[in-house]
Each structure stands twice: as C-alpha cells, then as structure tokens.
Length: 282
Ligand SMILES: Cc1cc2nc3c(=O)[nH]c(=O)nc-3n(C[C@H](O)[C@H](O)[C@H](O)COP(=O)(O)O)c2cc1C
Image (cartoon, rainbow, N blue to C red; front, side):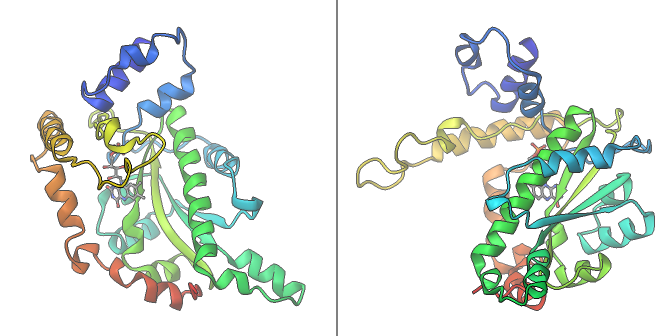
C-alpha cells in the first residue's frame, strides 16, 4: 500500500488526495502497482531477454479485447542489429531502438481479412473505409499496451516509438509489409539499465481530464484550464530539474508540437502514405 501511495504521489505531484482515494481499500492488487508505476525506459542494459519472453508478451497482447474479435493487428519482432539500426534511422535516429534487445513493430493488419475475402471470392469493400483502419489502430494499441503492462510486470522496460510513422513507405519496405498492413508504432523492450533509471512522470491533475456526466456544463464553453496548465508547467519543470534535463514548459512544447504541418516530422503526409499502402480511407 505504501508503494501505491508513493506511485500516486509521484504521478500527481501532490495534486491528488491519494489517502482519501485509498481509505476504504486496505489491499490493492499488484496489477495496480504495475500500472501506476509505469515510466518509459530509454536506457537498456545489454542483457538479452529470457527465452519465451517474446511469446509471453504476444500472449498478453492477444488477450486484449478486439473489436468484433476481428484481430486486425499483427506485430513484427525485430532482434537483428542491422535491421534495428536501419529502423532507428527511419524513426528519427533514436538510439534506444538500437540499444533495446527487442523492437516490436505494431501493425494495423487488414490483409488477413482481405485474403479471406479473396479465398471466398467475396468483396471486402468494408475494409476500404476509415473506420476499418481505426478498428485496426485501436486493436493494435490495446494489444501493445497489454504487452507493455506484461513486460513491466516482468521487470522489463519499454518505450513506444511513434516516430515509426515518420517515413511509412520505407518502414513498410524494411519490414516486408504487404498492402493493407501499416506500422502504427514501435516498442523498444529490454532490461532497464539500472545506472540510468527512469522516473515516474507526473500527469495533469485529474480535474483536467475527468468530466462527470457532461463535458460542457449547460450551454457554456469549456472552463478555462489556464491555472491547471500553469501549475502543471511548474510540476514538470521541477520534474525535469530532478532528472537533470533541460527545463522546458510543458504547455509550450506541446503547443509547438502542433504548431505547423512541419512540426509533424513527415506525418503530415500520412493520408497520402496510407493510400499508397493500400488503405483507401473512404
Ligand atoms: C504512441 C506513442 C508514441 C511515442 N513515441 C515516442 C518516440 O518516438 N520516442 C520516445 O522517446 N518516446 C515516445 N513515446 C513515449 C512518450 O514520450 C511518453 O509516454 C510520455 O512522455 C510520458 O512519459 P512516461 O511514459 O514515462 O510516463 C511515445 C508514447 C506513445 C504512447
């Protein structure tokens, strides 16, 4: 329980009355401790993963819910050093892709259902619509997050790699993806380097993200959130200082991330890339 309190304190940096939250719960499952203590790991030890780890992570991933049980996702496990090196170049030169013993590329995979339709000589028009792409993206994300929780429960560290979408056609070639398959994001997996530990990163206060019954009260416009943002900027500045990282304002960095199409680092042409890769997105 003390551990869970510590995790909640770190997650909200004091902006949550965690004792009130837990007062009627004398015991909490380990799963909650694993979830609350998540932190992305970008520094890995050179130790290999144990045998069977990949299969265990994929079993956890396949245990996630799946829209209509269509299972419109797949994953490519990359362990080859040269391939990880090439993928790191395609994904913004991120060193942790090379350093992690395992890199998982999580895929929206509509090709299985296309092939079933071809086998049965039936149309597969529904796969051409934006919603089918979203079904695959949601399924892939849920599966990946299950794998993340499984990895963390085994003492492993992970970090997602959204930059895998920066150059989608080249990634598709590198991973040998057929049409109607798209690499949604990557995931580095490995033993955390204990000499370079990662810390729990604070989040926005719950009142910024949790709405009860309705987002907008009556006909009004959203409540201004400037105070919460300003205090979160301060929380994050203190967090970065504690990690010896350069202090940047969260609100400024987040705003700049979306300021222009160039800020998307190649992902501004995603619709065009998806059409090339066999997703008409009607
Ligand atoms: C879909 C997705 C893509 C991400 N892409 C990257 C990435 O390309 N490189 C990276 O270092 N971290 C990446 N991250 C990690 C986030 O930066 C991280 O989750 C966020 O800063 C919160 O920190 P925490 O995970 O330690 O709590 C990604 C996270 C998600 C969910």
